[in-house]
Image 1: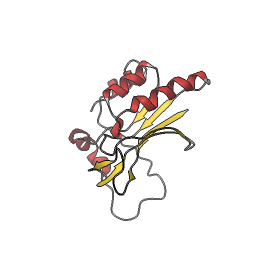
Image 2: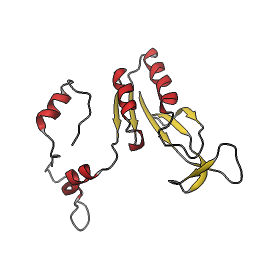
Image 3: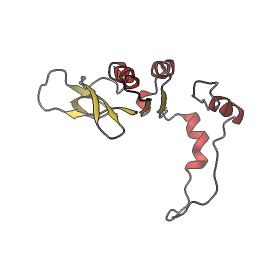
Image 4: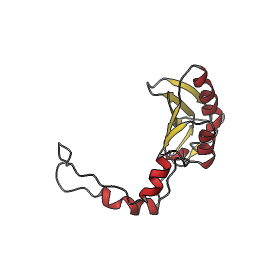
Length: 157
C-alpha cells in the first residue's frame, strides 16, 4: 500500500474561522493535510489554519493509517514531497519498518552534485534512450552498504 502525504491550499474569501494568510500561496486560506493511496483515494484529511507548515501534524494523519494497513495484511510505503523531509518523520517510519520515498529539499551541495546531469543539449529531446548512464558522484561503498540493509536508507552527498 503506497501512502502519499501532501498538503493543499483552500482559498477563502471574507473572515473565516482559522483561515490565515499563507505567504507561499499568497492567499488567505486553509492548509489541509491529505493522505491518499496510490489509486488517488483520500484516506484521511486534517483541516488546518492557512499559516501552518506543509508537514505540520503529519503524525496525526499518517501514523494511524500506518498502524491500520498491516492489520489488513498490507505492507506500507510512504511517499511525500520535500516539505516532509523531517528527521522525526524518517525516524518514525524507520522505527516501524516502513519504506519511504521522500524528496529532499534543494540545497547548494545537491545542486553542485547534479549540475552536470541537468545540462540538456539544444534542440528536441531524443525519442530513444541514448544508452549511456551517468551516475551521481557518491561514494559507491557507502551506497552498497546501505542498499544491503545496514543503514537507515538515507544518503548524504
